[in-house]
Amino acid sequence: EPEVTQTPSHQVTQMGQEVILRCVPISNHLYFYWYRQILGQKVEFLVSFYNNEISEKSEIFDDQFSVERPDGSNFTLKIRSTKLEDSAMYFCASKVVGANTGELFFGEGSRLTVL
Amino acid sequence: GDSVTQMEGPVTLSEEAFLTINCTYTATGYPSLFWYVQYPGEGLQLLLKATKADDKGSNKGFEATYRKETTSFHLEKGSVQVSDSAVYFCALSPTTDSWGKLQFGAGTQVVVTP
Image 1 (cartoon, chains in turn green, orange):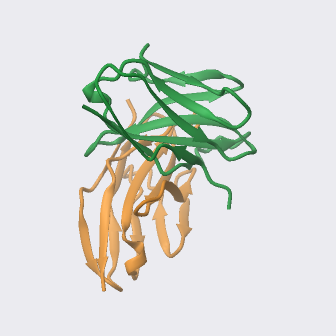
Image 2 (cartoon, rainbow over the protein chains, first blue to last red; image 1 turned 90 degrees about the vertical axis):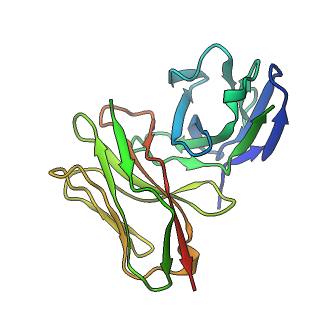
């Protein structure tokens, strides 16, 4: 069964360092998303991406964050200068064209720990 | 703004017990409602959904009915198994939204013991 894959599964970094989280969405999906979950809190929407541009972003997604689809398969989330409060589980998700009822397919998540 | 509130966990049950996880929502208009499940070591998976009032979503023995009058979407299963141990998330998608932006509840951990 097709699945969304994320790497790394866990990354530890020092505050101020740049981090890139990678995702390989399901091959025929064209809508891509990043969500995050700070420990003990809700899963929060960060950004949606379609047709090589951001379609929507939350207040959390400030100038320190960026997303990119550098080739036909990867979808990346970059945090330019990590802060302690960026420590969270980051989930990538994808969706087929035309599925506007929120049927997202999620990856297993990348846990980011900022020291 | 839109929000989802679900009961706190962990919920610990014996095998074959009845499970209910309460979920209520606040939203303008008529959102679509979802239950996602996260098994240990896996990503979130769609369990069931309902897109309009009085719709009942069902899957793997789980059911939830979209109740507009009580703004609720409670998840139920009549006889749980150890394999149902997971974290369950209630979520909504606003009607006007077509980009799949979901508003999640905090998640409820369910532990089923043999």
